Image (cartoon, rainbow, N blue to C red; front, side, top):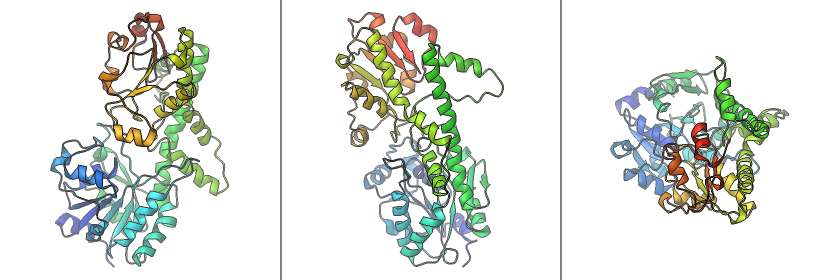
Length: 442
């Protein structure tokens, strides 16, 4: 069976491309491809599909472009039969014990297999440990389709590198790793992705290598942030300012520029577990990666404990204090709440019988309630506080003046009784000191 015509058939409109999974990765990919080829966008979430059909982009990744796209959004898996190039971009979370949860990938493989047209190429973008595409996905697709991989259809892997909320490093200008099961599939996959990736693709020799690239690049970032978080803990004990230390360090030409913070989201807080899980199956126990994960997973509790300490030193009884948290999403200027570590701050405060008030205009209140049991309060309805924790660096929080921040506190409090926790070091040290407030920053 000849697969080489897939690219030209897509360009001419003779064949269609399908995206399975329309979240923060799949939807922007579908919209971008639709500028050049016919695209079927499939997701099992009918609510999400209907929003896209009505021009609503809850992810805020493409904005107004969703209203004009030609993507055929659907929750009907049978429409996948019309595609010859299928891209799978479903989430890959971890379970409660931090082991990989391949449920979505297995489910997507089953759906693709049941609706696979002979002569197709299937490419997975979901982050997995090396071996998943070939050892788990291929057998499922073969079983469901009755078609033989390598003969009736072919497979490849191209890890997603979408950075939610990033308006600089976008889909089209992030170089993309591509791979295929053989030279023929690899060549076709590269040509198809080159349609939308302006800066070009980077082919690697095999699928396992491509799978490894993704989990290694995010594990590297996770480890570097873990080191910065350890430095923040040490600086806190030394009673010196972490931000000033890092500003000094970064004057050296080879400083890496990482900063401490809460490490959540769908990638950095998850992918290292996929890598270490694969290593453990081969008899190797991680010496560095898991320790980095332990440090980063502890930071929400560390921030909450710092808030408790500052309130006590301000003469407050923490369990009677009103604590307001600004921000719930896992990163700034983005509605994505997946694996948010702000929730760790909330949960630690609850151990002290403190039920904080949380506000975040970027986050979906329905998702916050369903996923975390958090009732988001509109910013203009939050009560006056004893302690304010600025947890996420949204622009609207970053741009607040000291006067505006002070206005968030109870009127009867003296300046030194107002406790401000600046998790992201958003505010200038000289302004914080001049404000007279009791402040702490990571």
